[in-house]
Length: 396
Ligand code: HEM
Image (cartoon, rainbow, N blue to C red; front, side, top):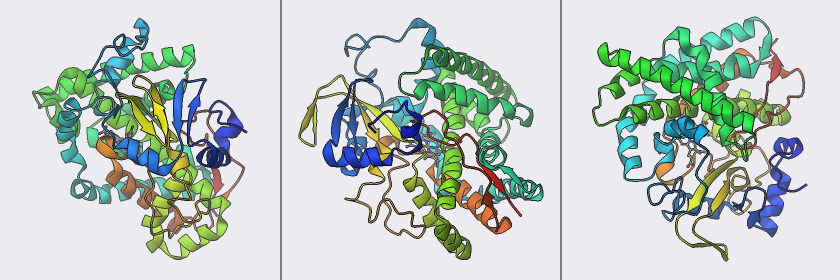
C-alpha cells in the first residue's frame, strides 16, 4: 500500500506505510495534493516550531502575491469564521487572541473544573452501564466533551444538540481535497453556527452570566468576527479530538487485552495510559503549514509558497524517539508524543482534554470491569480527523 488518504484500508491502518516513509522517503512530494509529506518525529517537531512556516500566509501576502488561487466566493462565510480564530492566524494577531482566552485554560483553572467533569462522566457512565452497554462513542465519548465545553462557554442546554452536527460539517472542509458537497455543507454550517453565536453573544452582552461567552462579549478589543471565530474554534477543537481519543483508545485497549488488564489492575497508570493511547493511535493524523520562506528539510529544498503536511501519526511511531513504537505500553514513561502539536499553536485545551480523558477512562474501567467489544468497528472516512464511526460494547 502507498500513502493514500482516500483509501479506507489506509485510513484503517496507516502505520506500515508510515514506517516505509520514515525509512525510505521521510520528506516526499505528494502529487494529488501538491504537498510535501514530512514523516519523521524530529522534522515534524522542529517544523511546528519554525517561524518560517505558518498556518496562514495572509498576514504577509494576498493569495495572488503568494501564488495561490483565491478561494471561490461561495466559501467566504466559512473562511470568515475560521480565519477569525487563533488557530488560523499568526502573530501578532495570534498572540493577542490567545492571550485573551488562555486565562480560562490554565492548568489551575481547568483543575477546578475536575469535579464537574467527573460528575458529568459519572452520569453518562452510570446510564451506559445500567443498560448493559451500547455505542460508546455516541453515548459517552461524544456527550462528555460537548457538555463540558458547552457549559464552559455557556451554550444553553436546549441548543447543545446543534453543536456536534455543525462542528462535524465544518470539519469536512479540513479533509484533503473535500468534495463540492462537503464544501457547501461546511459553508452552510459555518454561517448557521456564526449567526447562532452572534445572537448568543448579544444576549450575554446585555445580561452577562458566569460563562466564557459572557466574558468574551465584554472585551472591547475583540471584534464580533473574532468572538465568533474563537467560540467556533473552542467548540470544535474542544471536542472533536477528545471523542476520537476515547474511541481509538478503547479500540486499542481491546486489541491489546493484556494492557487493558494491566491498566484495570493499576489505575494509577491512567495518566501515562492516556498519553500512550494518544500516541499509539493519533486522533489528528496530519497538520498542514505554509512555507513562508525557502527551507531545507532532511536535505530536501522546499520552496516558499508550497504547503507541507506534518504526519503526526507517523512521528508518534518513530523508532528514533520511541522505544518499541508499535507496542502499546500503558506505563510508558518517556513519551514525547506530538498529538497536541508544538510551538505557538500548541493545543490550548491540552490540560482540559487530559482531565476529560483520565476521568472517562477511569470511570469506565471502574464501573464496567467486564466491558467487551461486541463487533469490529468501522472507521469514519476522514483521514485528518481519524476516528471510529461507532464502538459497540457490552458491560456485564
Ligand atoms: C485529545 C484532545 C485534543 C487533541 C489531540 C488536540 C490537538 C490539538 C493540536 C494538534 C493543535 C495544534 C494544531 C496545529 O498546530 O496546527 C491544537 C490546537 C488547539 N486546540 Fe486542541 N486538541 C485536543 C483537545 C482540545 C480541547 C479540549 C480544547 C479546548 C477546550 C482545544 C482547543 C484548542 C485550541 C484553541 C487550539 C488552537 C491553539 C492556537 O492556535 O494557539 N483542544 N489542538
